[in-house]
Image 1 (spheres, rainbow, N blue to C red):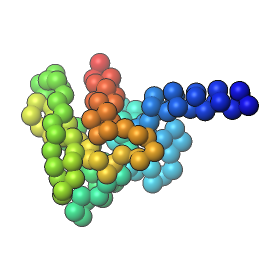
Image 2: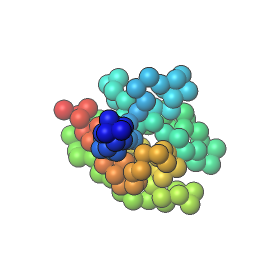
Image 3: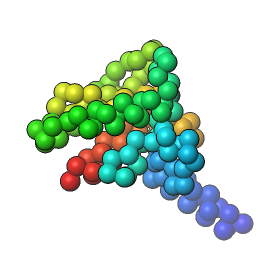
Length: 131
């Protein structure tokens, strides 16, 4: 019985550390929805905005990243609270230019993360790729 309790406690403690992470072994569909920087997964998008699917949002993010200049990349990333299509979101900006939009609908309900917590994790992953 105590082993079961220990496992339950371990899952409660470890779950926040693993939450909002891109999948460890993603399916092809999940890969298409995952923003990667230098082959490192940053976030898996799930929300559709208007007619824009998560896969299209990933492609737009890739295009935005490719368009940045060296001067842009030297600037700090900022996260701004926004509302899009009636959904709260966090817009990631580099040198005032949009990089990525993370919305409440992108989050997994089971992760138990707020939008701000998820945005901070995404920001940390993005910053890690800049060094």
